[in-house]
Length: 398
Image (tube, rainbow, N blue to C red; front, side, top):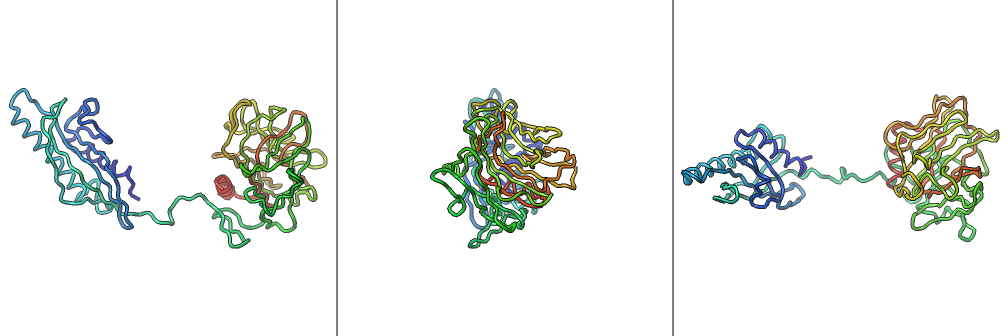
């Protein structure tokens, strides 16, 4: 596709290769800016507008080709030479656009409206310049189509049936969304008690229930506020009626408005899976560094960069989509948080079949939670890296 920037670059390339043009400039110009023009002859382009039709895009420009000459002697002759040379350069420019073969050819699909009328200017201060000025239109095909509009990925609804975006697996998942809670949120007064899956393709009933401190829905943020109100007190969502069935799982969480600090601690716990013998794998934000920590009984690994500002004063407002994969046959457990490599923990024989999931913090000293949850997806299989990135992008901009 030919863009506005590409057209400017074509003119720049022509000026760079033309033996007589010593400088090319672009944009508004104060006729003439002595600091802007130092090498002559010069070519200058000023945009005047654009017209878009179904088939073509027409770009309007004011074009100036000019040179400086000696006014101390033979002023008339020097002036005529200056105008003549500038006009030849202008003719070269028109010929390259209409019939060129070096920069703009038949494959480039750029043309211009002919004829072009140019007006001379003579003896312009402060540099004693003369040359030609004109307005002309550059015509390119309109190659835009509805198919190449760069919309963010979105799901498609047909009544109550949903098709997830290309690249996102469409089977075997439970999706909990805070964007539409009319049928899914169960409350007691203003407090959330449980959340039904927005879409449940796993089979069976998947419900997230609140444990501990109040969890309230914030209508302005379209999110559940998971906030530990009392130190060392439970505040999390979990599936109380069943544990994870299977050893291969992928989880996605979309959170916002958080940093590494909570009301009580310098650690903001986001997600954890645990079994009854006390084995835990968890993810939290470190207040001291602003990085994500991914921790197992064996080791703790950190993200390569901060995901939130350091300190307790500033919060990250932009949503962050985290993804976690667990596979009993894989070497690593992974946490995906941004572009680049995920955080990896050596699995060390851990099999999460029968584990319980927790979104938030489970009443441990030095661990508490304060974040807003907008989306949660759980799937009893392991997504590929490409599927994870497609899902993360869809959830981020949803």
